[in-house]
Image (tube, rainbow, N blue to C red):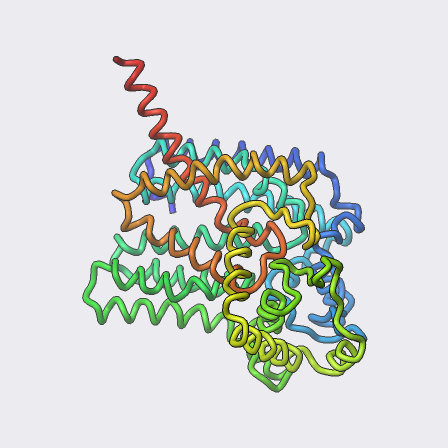
Length: 424
């Protein structure tokens, strides 16, 4: 990954990593939630429950909504719970500290990858350096190191996948394609929302490979095929469990229904017309409890599709509302969010980079060949969540490193103007 860099650039990468890692370590021990189960469960309860059941010998199981008892589940992608369970098995409660330290290292590597991506996309060392500097100090990338969830790992895999695709455009061999396929497969079983990016990233590759179309098509097929091979064992496990096809997670229909039903708020909270919380009727709730996950998901999918078909105007309004929530600040008190100090702080820590990024995208028109791949990712992720539900700020985390990258373009342009004026 760093073979083509100068000794100076390699030193820069080392300094970026060390500064980012030190900041994250300081935050982990200052925040100090790794030995407080109640605080960790506020965000990561489902992950903790599944991992704990694996350690106890109960397999990949949990008791989720509509479940009477703990049972084998596919409600989550497998990578993170299994990894967490491995650490808990060897280190006990210290496993939570170990995984936060690992997440700190992974988050620091994201800063390094962003530097390399900046060099590749813009061929500008200053932009790359500013982007990596911003990401090293970026609060969400620091805070989520303390969250027991797959967010940091998924962001790392996304940035690594996109960087490898960018490199494969100029490297005609098969190495980058094979590596991209392996990364994509791991990303899918970390968070299957990645599936939304496969069509657009494949189209980008087909349009930008420096080979004839047949060879390019073979490379894309190989990449996607390798990723599906990695997912296949989990899909087979799910088919054996439910006797039905479940690709990775058994809640696609449920999340679509959450965002598209008469009581949808755009978040995971359902509301009545008077803004009070809506709850399913008891008889319907009891009926759902007697179905397995796959059957429930298909039922919710049917309900969602019916609602979408019968209420196109309301669905469009909900889509636009969720799109706005994804890209800006969730402030809907009716949906369970309040304008507290955290939200106010986010308007600065996220809002300023976001506005700079919008300008940076306009200023990047001359590098559209490379920027378009990143734009495709921003589009695919925001579309899938706007179609389903925007339930938490972590849903947006994978796009934020790229917002920092485009913000760096704006900052670099401002610096150019400032330097020119000083010279004059």
